[in-house]
Length: 316
Image 1 (cartoon, rainbow, N blue to C red):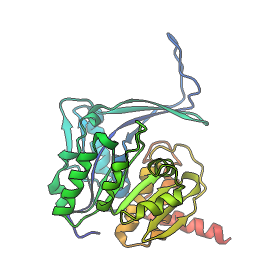
Image 2: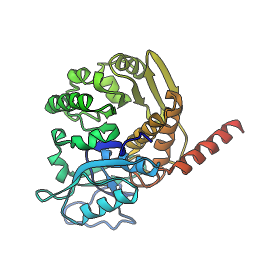
Image 3: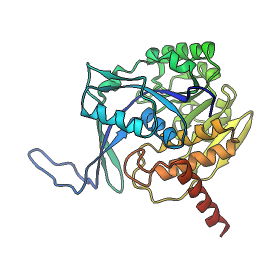
């Protein structure tokens, strides 16, 4: 699609997600609860984003790290099955593959996470040969002042050596710092992704619409995910909004990463902001209809069939 060896180069996290549905209460000391189901899925925001792009027919290359264990082998196979190039996926001899246990019920979710090889994540280890041979770069896992210098250094280098466009999903700041220095990175960003809460925090209280317009003054475009309210995008001082799709939500894991994949897919096709938001909302909606962050993510054909049915329902 981009004329490069890889349409998109992604560097970030990857792990196993073990989803345990229907858990209302964890067992106490010395107790055992029998459950009806427990399933294993690929996890990690960057990996889920990569899997989505592969299913849509793009050629993504993923750089990350898994352990020399059965989980690492399985994740590699899952990526390759979805046409993700694993040339840059490293097998670590230091740590085991990360695992996240997700306990879900109708009201809430809770997690136990072992980060494993994701603790070795270091943005400055990004493979610039992969960058040079890709049409678009996607980055995640911003941690404010802890890795701000690395992001700034890498983004400058990408701009120097490549004409690739760049998307950046900041993610949730667990420290509560919401580092104001993030604005130094925005001139190097073509697509800035945040959810509504993140945008409000980084702008010190602006509404999602105000935040999108504020960010778009510094980067090419800002896209804010609004969950059940849809999404908004801002570019060149213009705000575009797209409504949500109503589906039977089973598991919201990976919904934001699925949204990102749909948007970047549209962006690389040359679609308008409105159409990119429509594709993104659809991918996000479809992804929550099954357990696992990528299980229900659509192929290209399934995506447009979903949109056709939605349009027919609206017209009817």
